[in-house]
Length: 256
Figure 1 (cartoon, rainbow, N blue to C red):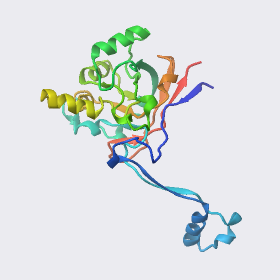
Figure 2 (figure 1 turned 60 degrees about the horizontal axis):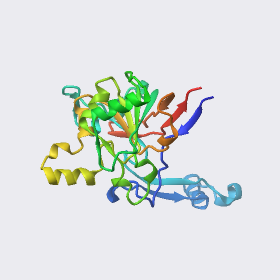
Figure 3 (figure 1 turned 90 degrees about the horizontal axis):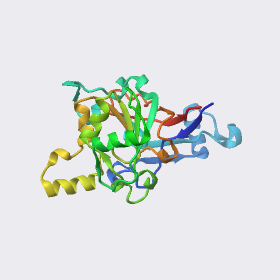
Figure 4 (figure 1 turned 30 degrees about the vertical axis):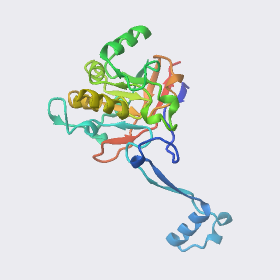
């Protein structure tokens, strides 16, 4: 059996995993409350259940972008690939989601930096990897180890339009990053827009999906545990009808 490395963060409350208006909410129902719920559903008394206990369960208020998730092209823009309707998460080919992986290490780049095509090419040369169609490319940033910390949303670099198109023009269709967003953090991007007046740089990596449709994962973890290559990524999304994203339990399988 190959070694399995978990690349997914836990879905939890009480940490800075998202902007305040997008934070997940989880209500935990323990076994005593579950016994009362069973009683309402079945007419059985709690005392008739094993030790008077029912089922534990959770009620969640979340978005499809909570926790580790896979974004579909529909999230970025209504069209892709020259005006075709953008693919939604329940239309993503499953064979995109189980493929050889490659990790690009950009942890040394400053927070807010926008990665260029030249930097992607240089990193691929450094690790000695020739991109192949449908390789899953993972981006390791300084945000990975800051997940849940107060500064998480502003940590790490992001992928710009030209870096994204460098990958997708070579047949890459699934990528991932350990930051909150595939793009550079909003706080840094908005500062540059105020300084330059150039609004087109906002969400430029996402919007590159309007030109060539692709999916990316956000809020990955443990990327520093991976080698540069020699592993397989599995990242099948939950099949939410007509949705812009689906939660996924992303893992890496280290090759023997």
